Length: 299
Image 1 (cartoon, rainbow, N blue to C red):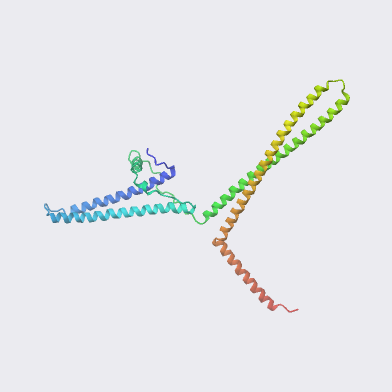
Image 2 (tube, one colour; image 1 turned 30 degrees about the vertical axis):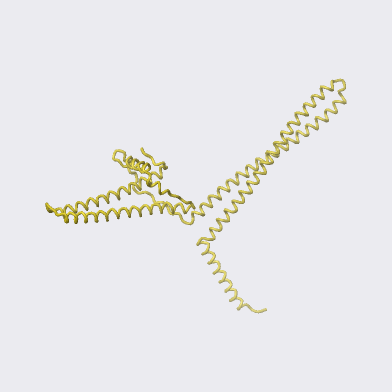
């Protein structure tokens, strides 16, 4: 079956529009047929006609058919404009700008593809059953759409903020563990050096050269481990700094989003009405205080 390269929802919308267009086209063709039928029944009652009579009949038929076809073409153009208006209005509510390519409307290959799609969808053998003829109307997007977008963005930033906090805690834990491991290794080295001095006092008959080689190997291995730990610590500290920068950036974005939401709220009718009511109440309180001051005894 021919496809238009659209998802299922949009393809169903196209099918609904094509069904509407086919219905209008069928009605207009019936109107044109009725024009010819009326002509046959009202004018073609004689057996012979003169050239002038034939010209008059054809001219009258031409005027009627021209009017019908012109009316249908105008109505089709206006219908397409209304359809585009629906799409553009929805896009503008979400701050999108759609573009059209008028040249593609005369692309023969694409037109044939649409014809094949219509044939596949509406032929009697392949026609799909209509489950529900009443399609739900799209809910209009009002000024709340912007606030909803801001709320979603705030929730996303809050989730990202929590993730960064969790990552920051993990990096801090890793950095602490690395520092503890480094301290343990340094204490082990000191203990080893102290043990080496004590052994020299008690063990004088052993081969000191082998012992020194062993100590040197241990020192080399320890130094290598210490260097690895130092590099790991630097990497953890860099990751920690990056995470903190990301956290500050997200917090700044969150603050901006909250300010934008507050600004949007202040522009709503509910906020202005509330502000006006509070102003009136304050004026009433001031007036009551002035009245009470007149009746209070003087000191």
